[in-house]
Amino acid sequence: MTATLIDGKAFAAKVREQVAGHVTRLKEDHGITPGLAVVLVGEDPASQVYVRSKGKQTVEAGMNSYEHKMDADTSEADLLAVIDQLNNDPAVHGILVQLPLPGHLNEDLIINSIAPEKDVDGFHISNVGLLGTGQKSMVPCTPLGCLMMLRDYHGSISGMNAVVIGRSNIVGKPMAQLLLNDSATVTIAHSRTKDLPGVVKQADIVVAAVGRPEMVPGDWIKEGATVIDVGINRIERDGKNKLVGDVDFESASKVAGAITPVPGGVGPMTIACLLANTVTACCRANGLAEPEGLTA
Ligand SMILES: Nc1nc(=O)c2c([nH]1)NC[C@@H]1CN(c3ccc(C(=O)N[C@@H](CCC(=O)O)C(=O)O)cc3)C=[N+]21
Image (cartoon, rainbow, N blue to C red; front, side):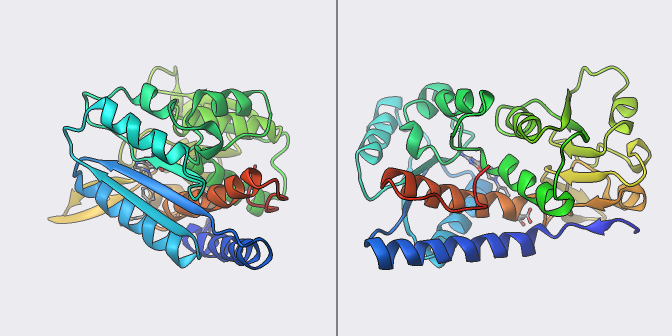
């Protein structure tokens, strides 16, 4: 391996430390404790793991964590009623509804029922529009975490060629907006892109967010490029369960200048940014100065 490892786990620990500092200041100077509510519908085991880890880290940062577990067959009306209650609860500054939702629930409708200023996922259409027009918004956690690592590693990404592989509303599209706001030249590639290897080869920055295990091999990567691997895929290899990214780490780390590992890269940054967004939302709700370095 020749690439520099971008240690998301260590970076996330630093972000959480900063968050905890802001939480202490909010408590001591203003008597306010930021609160994050997580709503989980159904019993998907992977989702339960994430929700538990979010709750634990929220409390460790000194914030209040509220968990709402609902049955898999919960009606839309019952879920909307819980969201309405959280929207109107002054102790709750951030609301996250764990995705994906069971099939009978309309995800767009549910997400858009969250008060935009409490939408710490940044998925509400109002936040999407604000981000797309370069206005102050809540920024989706995974792209925000990627941006923080890129800014930290490069200082500035202005004028760099960035290729985002994947066009999801959760990662690909908001990632492209953030890169564009930082003056990168941005290409969004996807499954229908002609000559994907050739497109990726042009990139100084590659963000892989397709959800296909080890899809991007080292020979697609330009020598010295920075590779951010958003993928978290559980696979079985040699009879063992393994977590791998969308990038073939083995070959890509021989050509890239810098690369994020999986696990220990983007994943931990996503949760750290969720905590950061909760503090940001709390400051905004109380008319206080926003934490520096924790927003886009
Ligand atoms: N409304 C909503 N917002 C989300 O942000 C959201 C969601 N729904 N649904 C599920 C996905 C998934 N997600 C992860 C966050 C952290 C890790 C993470 O920290 N992963 C560790 C590995 C953990 C392990 O070993 O499984 C790592 O990459 O190092 C993974 C996945 C947030 N999600």
